Each structure stands twice: as C-alpha cells, then as structure tokens.
Image (cartoon, rainbow over all chains, first blue to last red; front, side, top):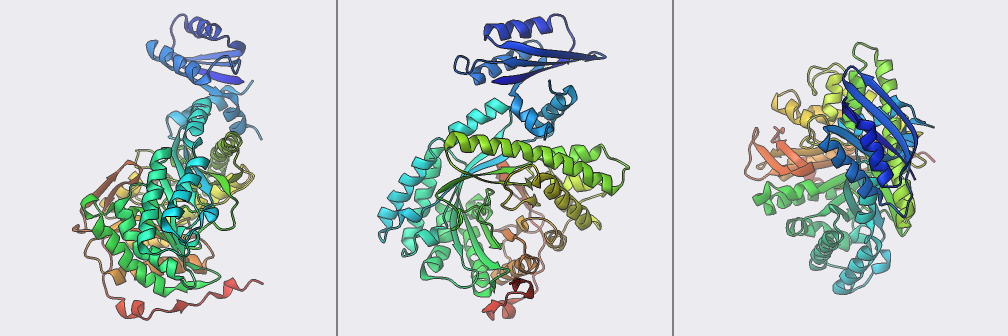
Length: 89
Length: 452
C-alpha cells in the first residue's frame, strides 16, 4: 500500500534524515518527497510504499507519531486513498 | 504526486476542524429470529447480532488507523422490534431491550437502535405493548435507542399515537429522573422515518432492507465553518459554492470508509448519510456556521434563511460524492449537542418557536431540547403534532426528541455528558391543547400524497 507521511513543525536540522531512517527501518520505500519552508515553518510530504503483510501499518503510524512528539513535530501517516478520494474525481 | 496544498488541507480538516466519520452503523434484520416464545426470540436475536457484528468494532478501528480519520461511533440498528416480535407482550419486550443492551455491550458498540414501532396509520397489539414498555426498557438499559413513527406523508398523522407518546415521554423522564431524564434522549418520535438512517436515536433497519447492511454517517460542521470563514464579505452565491465543495470532500471520505468497511466485513454497502452532525466540542457546531455567514447570534431573524442555504448546499455537494445517499441527509440542529446552540439559548436569542421554524428547512426536527419537568403530557403531544405536521406536509423527515427534565425549571441546565452534551431547560408555551389532543383519530394525508 502507498501511504502519505506529513511532517509539520518548526524547522530544525536532520528532520528528513530522521524520518527517512525510520522508513528504512520498516522497509518503507520512499517514492516521492517534497518540502516547503515558510519562514520557520516546515512542511514535508513523503509518499512511501509499505509492504503489506510484513509491516503492520498501525504500528508504523504510531511509531511516526511518537517520533514526531520526541522532536516537537506533528507527523501523520495516512493511506493515500483518503487524499485521492477527497481531491480527485 | 498529490498536491501539497490538498494534503495539508485534509490534515487540517481532521486535526483542527474535527472532521470525522460520525458513525458506521450495521443494520441487521431480525425477521429470521421470530418465535412465539419471548425467551427463544431473545436467544435468537442475541446470537444473530453477535454473529453478524462480531468484527464491526475491530474493522472500524483498523480503518481509523489506516486512513487516520476517527470513527466516533460504531452502532447497530435492527428491524423494528415490534415487527419481529409481533406476537409478544409487555414483559417480553422489556426482556428484548435488555438482550439488545447485552448484545451491544458485548460487541463494544455505542448504541443499538430499533426498539421501534411504525404506527403511522394504526397499531397492532404488539406495537401497543412495545410503546407501553418503552419507559421501563429505556430506564433499565444503557445503549438501547427507541423510535416511534407516528406519521407519513402517505398515511397522515396517527393522533392517537401522538397523544400516547406525550405520556410515554413523561413516564420515561420520570423513570430516569435520577440521571437528568436521560431516557428521553434515547427516544424519538418521527414523521416519515427513513429505513436506512445510521444516526441515533432514530436508527432502525427498515423492512425493505436486506439481511445485513453497512450505513455510514459523515460529519463536519467544523470543516464547513472554517470554509465559510474564508469567504467573509463574499456573496451568498459564493458561500453556497464553498459549502458544496466542502460537503463533496467530506462525503467522499464517508464513501471511502463505507466501501472499505463493507468490503472488510463482507456486508453490502447501504448508504452514506450526508449530515452535518454537531458535537458539544468547541468548533464543531452548526449554529456557529450560521453565525459565520453573518448572523450576530443563531436564533435571530435570518437564521432560517441561512440554514436553508446551508442544508441545500450540503446536499448538492454531497450527492455526487457518494454512489448511494440516504438516511436523514441534511443539517442537524440538536440543542444539547451543539455548543453554539446552547450559547444562543443561554443568551435568550434562540427559542423553541424559532427552532420549529428552522426544522422546516433542514433535516430532523426538534432535537435534544429540554423543557421544564412540569410540562403537561398534552402539551408535549401537541408539540409533537406541530413538528410532525411540518414533516408530513413538506414530504420530509421530522422528529421530536424532547426531554421534560424531571424537577427542573426554565434556565436550569441538565447534563448527559459525552456526545449528548448539556441542555439548558427552555421555556415552552403551556397554554392547554388538551381538548385538541383528546379528540384522537387521524389527521388525513395531505393532497401531496396523491402523486399517482
């Protein structure tokens, strides 16, 4: 399955590295990545491919949530279908 | 890849504006549980419900995590018990209510609906017995919800049933007086009750439905308010456009969840109910949308017009987003469950008469309204008759969920907690309609019922 990871928060060093390292730990392949920095505000969006059956998505998402909390960021991982449903006809 | 702006918009809708799936409701037919023995009937319905719904809560939780969207309630609706238990009596029906409550608790669902009777034209002995048993059934159970359909546009209004419901509501309030008359929050009187409504307290699994079905109710007043906020100063045509777009997005999420839940549970998908259902949380209020459109306070002049615009735009936006739309579909205006409505009542800006006018242009009706405990049963019946007439004449669903809060007076506050919220006790016109109500009989179906 493809999931969208969003990272929002105050810009600091090594945010992408931390999230990418976490993804590789769960064998989540990064397909696309984009980031914007508006003043001090950092928003990164990552599209990843997760191997269903090998990785429990709930555990993966919870881990990202706590990674976010540890680094003062808001990190969410959601199935890409929710975005496709909402924004594409 | 998806547009960054779109992704962030979705995240904001969920995290900041309280977008959620209000309910995934599994409808279960009880028609194969029939028995002339109340105990056997109860065993059969317990077995059927627990078999069909055993994966409902775990599957909904999986979906919540996968899509990152909260599903607030998981519920069950069943065939109106007075139909499936067509040869049972008072005691049996109370026992059925306890069984439904036990099944709901064991399945981990929030509410179970269908302790219902459809008596728009007349009632069978079983329907009379079920209606009589409602006060006791609701006082002895936690999650059972009850509804009585007393009118349809086709059949007219059964005024005998309306008269009876005034007394049933009073008795329910009395029997649950120790808990601020909470029984009445789980009892709704309908006109034109839909067969596939996923929202409580009025959900039941209609007779035209299949064996088991998944219906989903979406929510999102906070998201709509936030969208309207961005149109300050713009014309109402633009407000309508932005509400339509927002309703489309909200409904698409409902459709996604409904399709996925139906696939995982291997149960057919029924409908998505396009309703704006508020919660007591700050920022999740229908009243605040109306105020955002430019009203100083909900309940003032202009409220009905603003609500009509909102209700229409929600339906227009949502209808293309789902393959099957049904249920109540429209804006809800429950007083106790809406922070903005409570505020408007407390300020003296919103009265019962204005709420009644508002129900002519939105879904449902006089919902979650507390009135003084001393209110006469005939006054309640007459209030029901008024509200039901609006539904019958306008070929729409209307309902009354009123709480004559035992021992409370106008201005007091009753508190149910959770989604049911807090209700300020409102003033009700107490001039006597007794002679009118005591006439009984039926108000004939209006001319618009003759469409053939």
